[in-house]
Image (cartoon, rainbow, N blue to C red; front, side, top):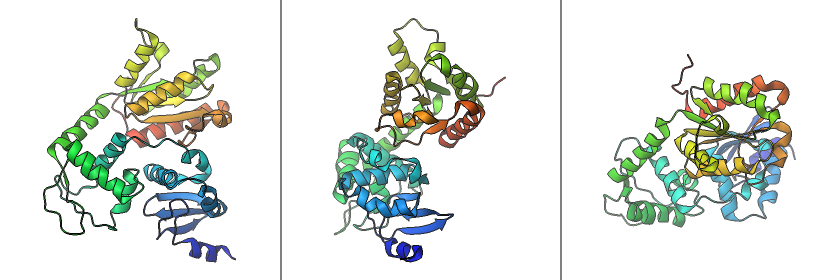
Length: 324
């Protein structure tokens, strides 16, 4: 069977989440996949063709977790990640999923206070399912009605409910206040904290790549061994991370402290930028390998500096700090 026929036959179903209506587009032997739930991702055809069989041993929840992760990381190349490790990543807790959903609603509303009504099977369902890491419409309904409306009051239900419809809803004043508090927390700091191994061989990586990349992106680089303090070191690390806008976590050397600091930052809702020496990626714990690591070579630190600066700016925008 030629490639074109195989693509046409598979075009109705996403190889990851199984959603119908998926499309494939050939781009120089790599296929661009567009799925209503997963968004856009890329992969060679032989890998895409093998995915249904590879994922058959995983639960629906695990496959939908991969789908939601891809939606949060658009244009991911499947060749750059381990899909099996990604299936094993722990699911976000309910509160985190609700916040993801609320932020998505805020970024997609056309005007403040917009009232929405969802019909079962509506076009927006896939967006909300993916944004909230939901495996079913029932889970999505729980997050909208029970959690965001009743428990947190971050949504209002201003209209009567027509038969066969979901409750209509709009972001409440309390919801906007919560979102504003998140934005304020995210916007005030200019510190880019770096969690990394302090080994002698890493000195040039910090001095010639990571620190100047953070500075070039418009932020203030911070590494705990350069901070003057009289507190316990672990207390000061947590305090510095709380003051930071983002964290660069380099896993070269497999230091336990880096895992802790990256996890602590994630728990605070801070962006984490994952880096590692290219020959050490396979040594990182499988729970972390699903993240989009920047890999660097000791022989080409200028390239790492440029790539890290570009990644920071892409995620956070150009910072306000200008070197004198």
